[in-house]
Image (cartoon, rainbow, N blue to C red):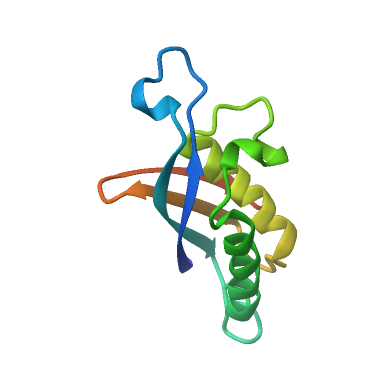
Length: 126
């Protein structure tokens, strides 16, 4: 299995909407690091899992969307607690809309909320 991983780091804000969220119920910032990992059992004709330039372009757009944003105000988070788990899935949703996945069979989006905590979402692409 071949794997390709590209990362981005940006600051965004959120507040949790669960009962009794404690201090996390107030608007606060996180320095998020997003790792996008694609896997494929074989490479395309150019020797790629996917075109890394397309991955970088999609991540540039996604970073611009989320950098300095209040996640709670974005339409994709409507009705959701903006947990890092939901963020990982929603980030992946937008990523797969933007990148031709060619031979890739799976996508994992891992989002580090701080230095010692992360959540991820994995999906099959076939």
